[in-house]
Each structure stands twice: as structure tokens, then as C-alpha cells.
Length: 264
Image (cartoon, rainbow, N blue to C red; front, side, top):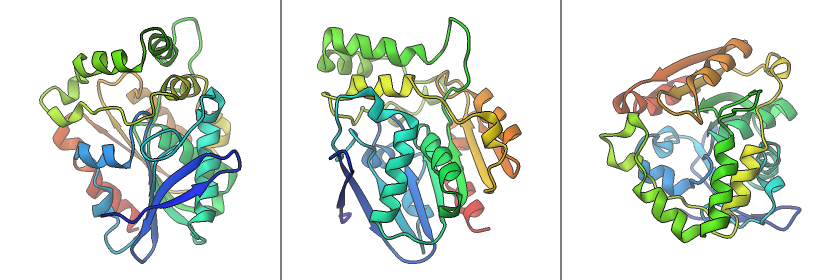
């Protein structure tokens, strides 16, 4: 049983988190619609294995898992996720630079937080960074707005049934656990999706100044987390390494790859 702590943000949202173990700190932030528990159930990226002989900080993003949230899209923008992360480092008493991994929304939060307070981070691992820097009338991020409109139209319960019946990403076609159940509050889910749709990754010029050694991990066949974003990040971030997975077995190497990277 994981001991849980609670942090109340300045805007009265409660963030549920865990801090355990000793040693160099390692942190993890999940992606949109997920949670700490959902990530563990996927069986793809083992944060507990990476945290062996380390001090682990893991938490549920606002509105997700055991954290509370408000029905305000601005609360779920990438910049707000970064502010929550920096505030949580203070609440958890983590003063030394942390090795931090984030998936999707968590990766975006890590980038914005590292640019705001570079001294708080030692190394970064960015898993499935989200689609970014789009222009023109046909943008992939429109999925967030369309899905939010659908939820508002048919209700969260009906949307969850549709989600359960939808096919998995091609890379997870033979991996039943890859089809996760969204772990986000029904009251805020459409706002969370709109917040993600309104967001973008930091400006490329700013990313070029990022000083941290960075591991970038992408998987294929995911339009909302395209390989092209990961490749662009690898071009922009000076001290970065890119790995692209094309099978589930390859995705499962990410745990050891990240542990090895953070041991440097």
C-alpha cells in the first residue's frame, strides 16, 4: 500500500502524491486521462523499478486519479501542469535537482518547468511528447476539442462506453493492457481535454537553450503523439537522445533505458 499525501494548490485544488524511498530523487508525471494507478496497470513503464534505491515522487495531475480539479480548461494547460509540478517539489521537500520523467502531458509539464526553474532538474526523460507546433486548418489537436464536445453532448458515461469499444493503437493491437480505462473525473474531463487542445509545447527557440541531458522516447502509430514531435525535440534540445519504439516489446525497454540514463 502506497502512503499518500495531499497538497492544496493556491487555487484550492488538491493534488494527491506519494514520496517514498531514499537516495537521488526521481519523479514521474502521467499523461492526460491517466493516473499513477493507470500507468502501473498498463505494465509498460515501471516507475517503481526505476525508483529502486531512489526517492520517488509520483502524483496524479489535477482532475485525474485521486486529485481534484475544476471545470476550467485553463486549469489543464501545459503551463499550469508545470506550475503544479514546481509547487509540488516544494511541498514534497525535494530541494536537490531531480531526475524527472513525464508522459505526454507530463512531458510537457517537465519541459515548461525545466525552462522556468532549470536548477530544480538534473536530467529529463520525455515519453510520447504530444503533437506540437501545428499550423493550418486541419490540426491533429482538434481531436481534443471534438472529444470534449462529444462528452458534453452525450455525457461522460456514454463516452466511456464508446471509448471501451474503440480499437487500440495499432502498436498495442496484440496487447490487451494497452487499452486503458480513463482515470479522470467525469465532471472535468471535457475541460481537461480542451485545456490540452489549447496548449502547445514551448517555443523552439526556448527549447534550444535547455541545458539538461534529455532522453526522448516515442512510439509509432499514435497521431496525438507523433514521431515527428519527438524528432523535432531531439533536433532542438542540445544534449538529447532519441529512441523510437515500433513494438510493445520495444516500449517495455523504456524502463531500463530510463533507469540507465538517470544513473549517468
